[in-house]
Length: 186
Image (cartoon, rainbow, N blue to C red; front, side, top):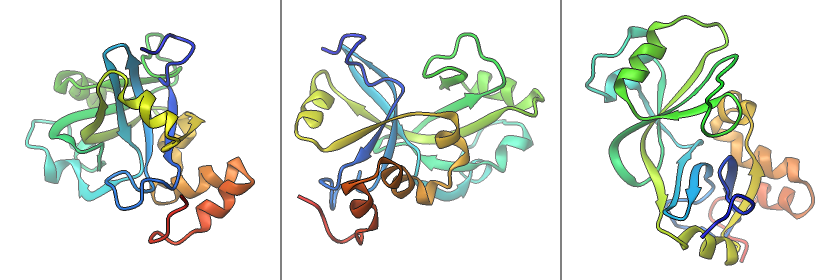
């Protein structure tokens, strides 16, 4: 059971090179919740090649329908989640000024409001861990951690996110970032 000092909430998890051939190969996940009930995260770098309007049958503002839809994880692919940032969100629930939401009503409200600083990323599905499961994966060194930031969540090219973060870590991680996808580093 994670305590506040060991919770991974607000951290990015990166495939450490040990997830070759799995759903999570070369993924970057944002851990949005991590407590005694388990963990919840969203894959930031797995685009669906579709936009929200093509995939979601809901009455959403036209501005949101053009946003790309990301595959948040293998669990409940029909479940919608979104990450939302603005210039100031006092009750942000992931990291400062970053909120996780699931409500279509909240998403509509956000889509209908205007703010030049507003950023939204929408996801189908999510990654989930039962109590103790993520801690076991961390002990096996399946994941590397890196602090989340608004820039990494919203502004870094998702196709290059995994490699860019590894390069920024330096050392042996630069080599991992350069390895072809069909090789693993065990």
